[in-house]
Length: 278
Image (cartoon, rainbow, N blue to C red; front, side):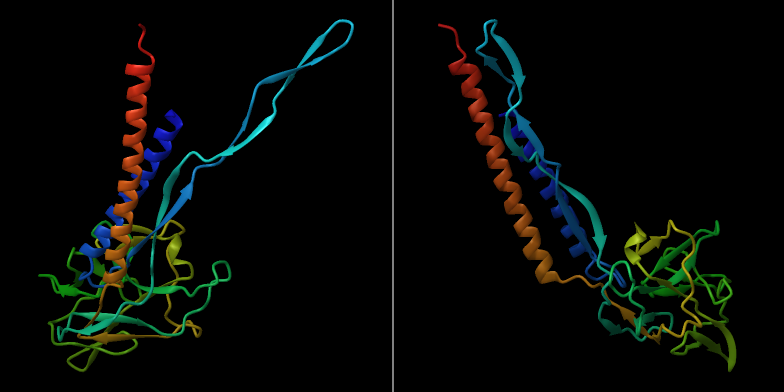
């Protein structure tokens, strides 16, 4: 019976995490470049049960031999193994803001290991020189005239330098070249991740690579993309699916909760009624 408590409780915890995940997706439905999370649920390893027994051999001097006949396997519950971002391209919407830049995927190589296309990212850097990657092109000019994210991360050019602009009166070509006052200022660098699932999601639309710096997509003949100034990539959250999945997780949580309550009532009877000495 105690094993039943643990199994139902693990189901409640897994569904609670699913609810939190879908709630976070819904909350970020209007966040530019946000990549929705998907849950990977997994059962705990199965246990093979056996019974301690013995067999007696009818000899002149009876002998007993220990046996362990197999009863069968039993599952010990479920848990959320990991959250996997969905890197599908989001819809593109027009904003008219010159500092808003949408990164639109074109032709991308297919990863041999996963069988899926890679994806592209803007490369940003903080004051300490840490490199991160983002799909959120909702940029701004800071007081010093550098192109940054709203959180203050500097957007990098093809040479790994921060992009400094004279004003918001500039144009961004399809290949990322920035022109102001008829002069070429810089070219926005774009990183390519062959398997984006190896990246770590940090929040605020940022991803971290634990396998070194991602290679640049510039100059790669197998990669095509387009940058559109005055546009933003929207979050790829499917609100209808998110609401449906969240309600499904809530109902599964309630079902496991009722099982725990049923076990609790059974334990209460076993302890306070059946086990009572008269």
